[in-house]
Image (cartoon, rainbow, N blue to C red; front, side, top):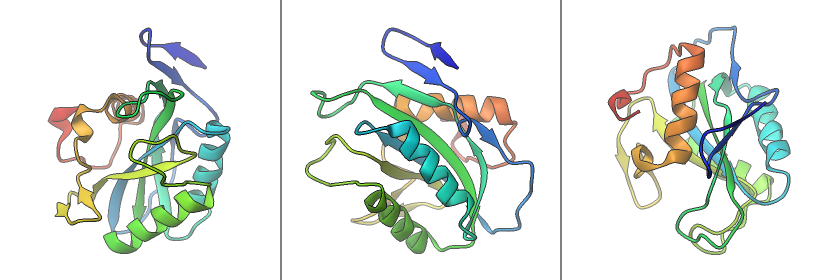
Length: 174
């Protein structure tokens, strides 16, 4: 399914985006990640990522958003991006969770050539159990998340359609 939101924004639904879990999990932390990409078959990469997370005992996927096609920002001389949101539960610490997201980016072909460069997969930790972290390598909530259509629009659709049971502290920004 494809829904044109504006001249520059299109929402897509696939088999795994959006998704709502029918099971509960006793895992301790709720993480919300943003995913994005514009190199290769991005929908296929997202599906592989979804299955990788779903089949990993460290994670329980709560829900996913539909996917949003939107123009790149920062470095704009590149193809449009496809973006989505995944809410999941984990018992991993924030540092271990961050390391796994970085390994997943590399597994799916991420190369860090320059800031805002084209990429196969970008995983941003938007929220991690309402924690606030500000280090050289990691800022949570993700810096400037509330001003990015690539986060706000998928998050709105995910929350609306799933009657989400996960808590987002800054809902007023959505």
